[in-house]
Image: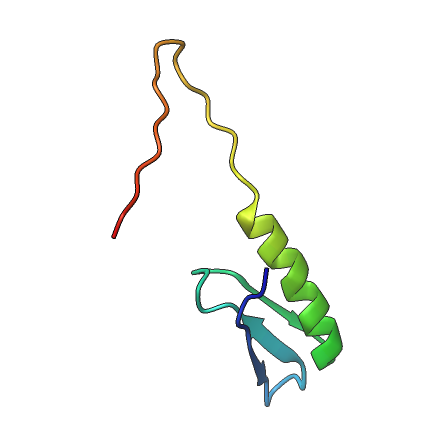
Length: 67
């Protein structure tokens, strides 16, 4: 799956900030552009991992479609 990412140089540190606009809060950084790109791949992978949810035995799980 492809994701759009934004790379921005940090004028103070010389490092590269990187973030994914479609995934709020999914950001990373690296010393080089290549390092930042590798780092954001890992951040996106972690962002997309589902959280474990503790549910009561009587809970019902459903999916809904929006739009």
